[in-house]
Length: 192
Image (spheres, helix red, strand yellow):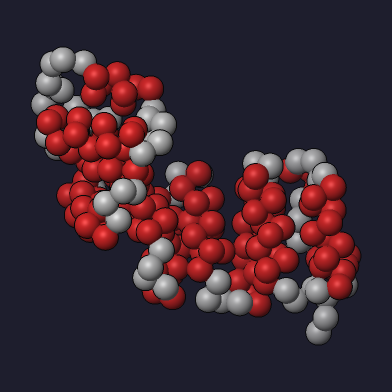
């Protein structure tokens, strides 16, 4: 059964935000390629860039209907889940991506940060350490280690990884930056 253009449009909510020319072009491509996972993925990415999370999710899920092994769609679904603080779904989507292709550090980073949000600090620490072992220059992994070490009251290690992360272009959260640039140790049990 083929989808009509109206069926495709009905998957998305025009009230979620403005559908500009870029979005319009993706819908036009779907007129000619209604089963293209790439077009749905690109549409999802465009929606995500415009903070239309529900529309982005619908597009990524449609891409996965046509190509269930599209790693990028799984990672982006995980990112959307992270954005709505659904840590378990973030981990599930990124684990799906890793089951397809274990070589995506972004998926592992997403899982690590979700684990931090779940207060699974020891697991996150191990994951960030493994990522750095393979990609020592990856700033976000050093930032994750900084947060994990700070949570475990390892201020010296937290500052070391924080400095590396910032030198690699990571923009730290202001509150966390203040915590690491003070001269005193964190309070016992303090969280970032």
